[in-house]
Length: 142
Image (cartoon, one colour):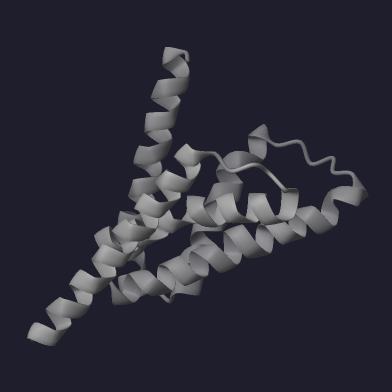
């Protein structure tokens, strides 16, 4: 693995973490939908110079699917959750994403699950459950 790949991976994680923090600030004053509109709008503006807009017509349904489900819908739900809970809790709960991807790959593409993947997915689910149980106990103590 190259150093550039490691640095880019770490920067990716850092900027993704910043999304949660900045989105939490944005949804204080704006609706989650408005915050997402600005996010996607400015993102498109910054990416436009690096984009090739020649798209085969056969790929349009897939692009619309990508635009709606993992972009629009996922971030609307995440931004809405940020109005209700802390960034730290939302980001931990969002770590369930790789488990969902793993299961979808297994069921849709018949990919083989390794023991390491199953153990990792189990640990992620357990971590999320522990957080949920802890949160429930805190509410009951109040």
